[in-house]
Image 1 (cartoon, rainbow, N blue to C red):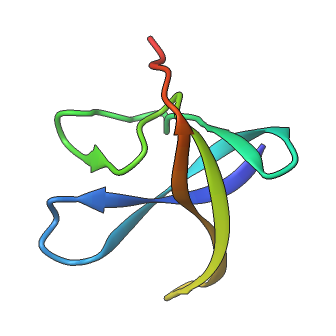
Image 2 (cartoon, one colour):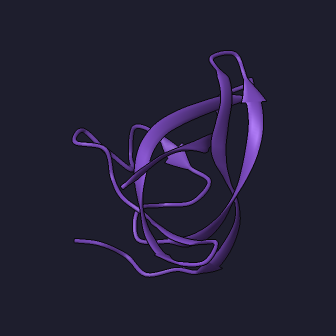
Length: 77
């Protein structure tokens, strides 16, 4: 698993949520939910199950991988 950050929508300011992603191939990752993921509490830019590309970005905590592009969406139950 790889630690990644997902941008939260509708927060009023730029906020990111750390979570994990499963590597599936070169540059391709599946977003995994946090243990307390609640789609009614937080609106993630890329929901768990989404296939995404990552980009290194500088956030307050340092350089991290951020999901920047959705390639395909599948939902997890």
